[in-house]
Length: 64
Image 1 (cartoon, rainbow, N blue to C red):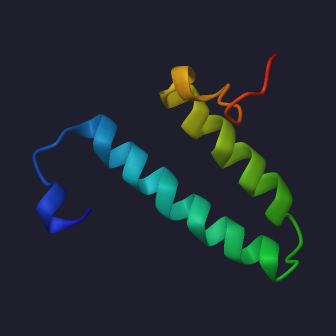
Image 2: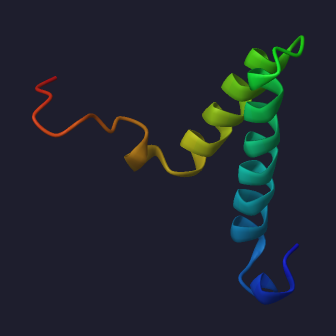
């Protein structure tokens, strides 16, 4: 964990790890590595689970 983030709690530590892993998975996807798409989807779902209020964001003006 980042030294500056110490003391922010387990939720932040998990979020930080998930975002780091997501960044790495996107790189793997860009390189067309086998299994990368599945890792990106899994990590995306894990991040959405942490913040469900952000999981249905749509562009401005997009009526759903």
